[in-house]
Length: 261
Length: 348
Image 1: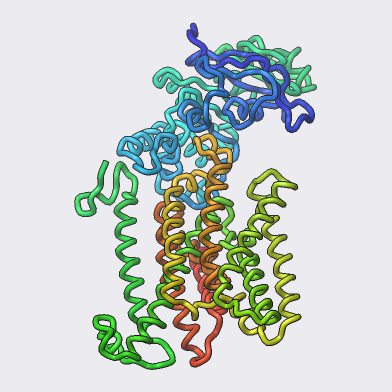
Image 2 (image 1 turned 60 degrees about the vertical axis):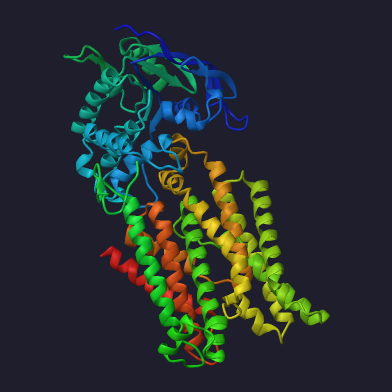
């Protein structure tokens, strides 16, 4: 597989809250268009913080982030929202909106507060629901559906935002096996057809191995290893970071490493 | 694209046509306010035949006394109730949205306690110095409200960065502090007790056209400005970070909403005193009736709040006529059971 221009470049990024212990230190990597990059690592290794730094919510103390070769500091959050969308881990909604109304919120970066939305905004929202198979949920109240269903609705919302870069934070954590599988297929399709690039935090190493072109293994805020699943997921790396000795086997169909205990 | 009410469909690409819903709601709400107002014009100490009231509305020169009662006493009161109810409910809805807390009300940042303290100080000063200050009480109240806002803002900045939790906690603390000061004032004064209590529990009996002309502009413009933040409030329902991801500058949004709301509330409270409960329950009722979309929910709250307060005020001046009950007592007495009933029905 060949990747062309870089959509995202991260140079020497460090982050800490108010000068306390560094949560991210000296992060460097580049991301090519059409790539799916997985981020793995133990709890507290800085996975979610890295996503927040990329999405512009947290400002790094050191280093630079370049989105489409422009410094992220030059982007307002209004502008970032047209390039990057995020599927969060926490999908609780304060008020009981219908699922379709939540998906429609993905269009907010494009809607003028004075003129209002256009027909196109509704069409895109509906299309995003179709793609994520959340259309049957559209009339349901968001507080009354399951965590997995909410994640599908939030995925639809993120796609309705028509981003170039999609950030996912453990999006499969509440999904059933079949939906995890379908979401993976959906993402792979979106990578090809919609010119999308994805960074996803994975808790499940096996899923990360199957889904990702490349993996970043984070350990205490530093990149321990970056590379293909074959390069990252080996006994030596995993033992160093996770402090247990796993058994690795090769996936019989996909030829990627899988971990069993 | 433009929607006209007859041609426009009920749904667009599977989405409710909220503009159509909004226009229908405004038509219904306006009729509701008109109907309730006409009925409530009949309530009062002096009984006037409904026919005479309609007659007076068309031609006030016929009977001087009746014209005076209808035009100078009852009508201003009803319009004051309309504006106050709409203002309290819209701000309540906006506060619940911005704080992501369905228990927020317009007074949560201590504006009410500040206004009440200001007014009570005015009343006490009038008594001790002998100067006639009654017509300046709204000014005292407004200054009190602004002072409490300033304190809340400053103290939340010291201990927390200006976030919702910090503001809420500071608001609660300032409210307690000011309530304590009011209690001290009440304990020190005896004769003025009654007028102070009417202040603390809300009072529409002093409504006149001049007051209406002062509050109508901030209320109407303020509520419209809040309305144009509806989509941002919707997004905030997904959480602070999600709203940021959708390109919404939540810090600026929060300051904008708090500032507009506080000016609305400080103005209203300065003339009516603290009318509780309206701003808490009406947005809930609106949400139960019409859904949480602020684009429709906020205007619906305004209309429902207006109707609710017109009715409560009619009760306040008729139940023990010729005496009056403070309207804040009525809103709580009527509102609390109504609210519990609606919550029960919703859970079934």
